[in-house]
Length: 312
Image (cartoon, rainbow, N blue to C red; front, side, top):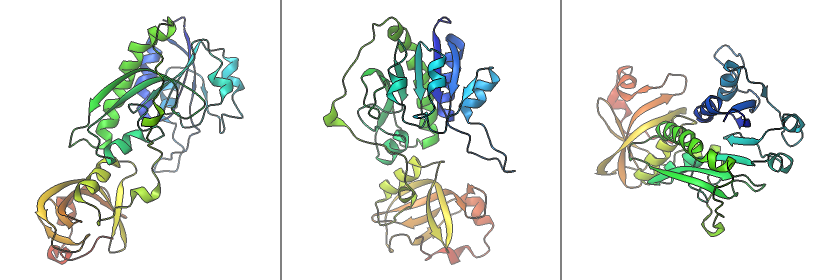
């Protein structure tokens, strides 16, 4: 449908497969992305992943600092439809009400569950067994528009954030391609969200990254899974920040105070929690690179000296 003029709004790598599919099947006339913020090791500004793909395909890119004040350029392109995915700013009604086929959002949860900017993180942290993608008409209230289509996937016990992120990104691409023809033909469903079932998955706060070993082993492991690899769950060892990226539960009751290192093996460090032992297997100690515990232990002469130390 190369005659359909599309403006795409998105920022992170999650949105890249979706934009790529739109470029291949529709006429993407403009890409809108958040201002570039990330820097490489040399301090150079890095393009957002969505912007990078747009540049490779010779598509103009617009990066307003505040889209509520800088939106006229979008209207000047006269799009038939606007599609958003993980854009990162609240879009004003002036844009939402403009395209003839509406503004469509690809959201990483089964709405009305987990509205907000970090639904994938929270689904895993909460211990949910499934999540999915919702294609919806956008409204002025965050993630509250009418549902057009949904598809779910299982969250496996060993799925970390990065894995679910990739699964949902591809699912979002495929479901959008399935759904768009009905939107353009104006035969799509419009299902009102049940406001009594609404939950939220807002952007992760700094306080939610800190591990509390007074919690249960399963809750801590879900926190580790849900924050791997961005931003990473952390604690402190000898006053140095220790990010924990991978862990597993040992079916043994904790004998020491929560946070105490009870034992070590060649590939894990076992930490006491509220109930069971938690074996951490992949970490990043402040000032060091990310590594498996086996590599970390290889650099320590007196490994037994770790036993009894407390992670805080």
